[in-house]
Image 1 (cartoon, rainbow, N blue to C red):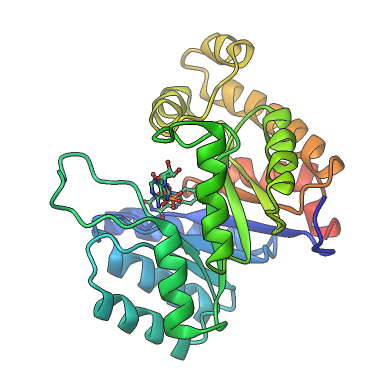
Image 2 (image 1 turned 60 degrees about the vertical axis):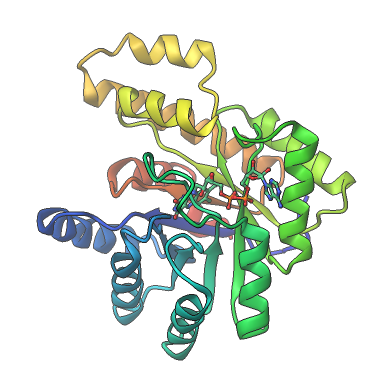
Length: 283
Ligand code: FAD
């Protein structure tokens, strides 16, 4: 399915907002670093709220010996600030980033600068040439703002044509959505690796809320089954590990060029799924 011969397994964090959250994340990072992922990525607030948090975490992980990739968007920065940030990352040996339009913070209104991700990819290439490996986002179940499946893939192609090297998908629980999406992208001459984004299931209420916002479908059988766990958090997590392990297995068996875990800054489920799949031996 992919031209890349080596699979990539990566793990995503978000910058915590509290000191307690930061020290918890240090422990989580230490545990997940034992899995030796290809890189950790760190999300970036589109309103610029976690601008420094993203940079600090990425540089800290790099110092600790992990490969780390910042997420980046124009949100809240003008071109010269963004250029400075890119040059700073470059000079500190960061060589990969995830380029996004970003989510528009609720209540931000039309005053917030929001520029599409293809413009950002173009800007990164203009500013720093081929230095960075650029990942972009894509949506097997279609981005919620898109007029149609085809339009969304056309806009994805613009990011690829602007110089993206690989893509990470929004999460999904239906392997066919991914396989059909990759097939459609190939027919549109999008030939970069498309790595499935994987969301472990740890909290049904949060998952339902996120999924509603980002347009990821929780299939009815799964939603109904998750509802049966009520307050049984361990039962739900174990069931979620089983479901997501099988999903990942199907994806890898079907040729997915890697997996990107949305860890939600938690280590248990990612570690268990990773070990169930023996990912460290499957590159
Ligand atoms: P784009 O590719 O710019 O697309 C946004 C929407 O506009 C789509 O509907 C697209 O079809 C449409 N579109 C694209 N180009 C054009 C155009 N030229 N004209 C008209 N319409 C167009 N959010 C954060 O805030 N911070 C993060 O760190 C973050 N990390 C993420 C990581 C991954 C792997 C993924 C999948 C998502 C992440 N998100 C993050 C969420 C993401 O920012 C949102 O999904 C956002 O709404 C779209 O970002 P994008 O880069 O895909 O945007």
